[in-house]
Amino acid sequence: MTRGARSALVLGLGIGGFVDGIVVHQLLGWHHMLSGWYPDDLHRNMIGDGLFHLLCLLLVLVGVGLLNRAGRLPGRVLWGGVVAGWGVFNLVEGVVDHLVLGVHHVRTGPHELAYDLGFLVLGAVLVVVGGLLARERASR
Image 1: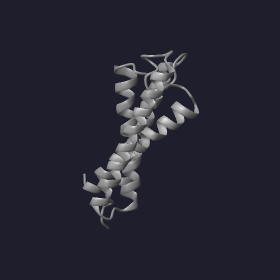
Image 2 (image 1 turned 120 degrees about the horizontal axis):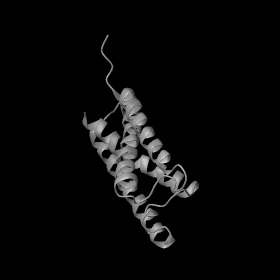
Image 3 (image 1 turned 30 degrees about the vertical axis):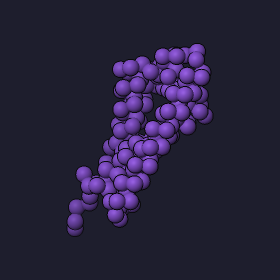
C-alpha cells in the first residue's frame, strides 16, 4: 500500500467515525458512546461522545497531514481509501465496542444483534468497494 493510500485510509477512519457519531448518536439518537455501560447517565455519555468526536477529528487531521506529505494522489485512490477507511472504522468499532466490550450497540432493544451485524456487513461492503475503487488498473 502506498503512502497516499494509507493517508486516505486514515482520513476515511476519521470520516467514518464522524458519520457514525453525527448520524447514529446525534440525528437518530440510537445510542451514545458509553450508553451500554452507563444507560442512565447522559452527562457521562455526552463526555464519551465528545471524546469520540475529538478522536475522529485527530484522525482526519492526521489523514490530511499525511495526504499533504504524500504528494499528488489519483482521485480514485483517494476516494477508494476514504471509503475503505470508513469500512475499517465500522469493522473495528463494531467488533470491539458492540460485540466484545458492550460499550454500546447500534440500536438497543429488539433486533439489537441484527443492527450490530448489519453495521459489520456495511463495514465489509465499504472495505470491498473502497478497495476495488482504489486498486491499480492493469496497464493496457
